[in-house]
Length: 225
Image 1 (cartoon, rainbow, N blue to C red):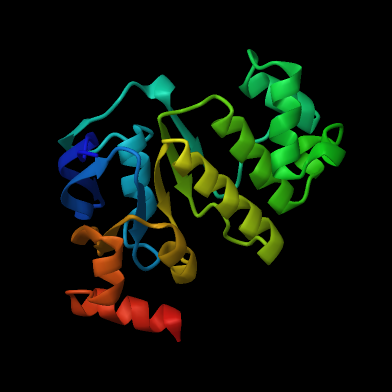
Image 2: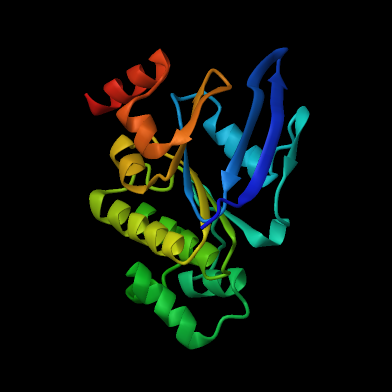
């Protein structure tokens, strides 16, 4: 399969208080791959994620990406409506049949929570609801910002299986994580960001086996410790 580029970013910069918090980032995202954005807190991962998704407009640079309606994003803290989990899903995916809807709730292990107010679900349940709401609309591109941060092992494992299923179904996934083991398991490609600069842009296996920069080596060593 040839590597088709789905998003191109050229010289993206975001300036805050006179300094570049994203500094001339140029990269491209390959269709059908899981691209992992890694780096320390405050390195600029979430900013880059949001810029690629079009939520933040960079101060300079150009992004070429598919239309917004083909993209979905799941935030670390999902935005939930004041209604039941079932009605929240209906709002996100109004055209889905009842059968397909039930299948999504089944896959997420949320059948028993369909009538629970979405905002009263546990953190893991809220994240799974946000996930199936995003996936059921069949996006080409899925953006995930720390999708399993603060979740217990079981909820994290379920989120990872939903990510893997989406990937097998051809969805291009761009995500941030602090969990190196998760990045190892899921990533095809890694973008490593340090102080707003993209310093590694490589195949995941190569990155983990042989990080080229001291900062990346230190990051991996620290998170494996």
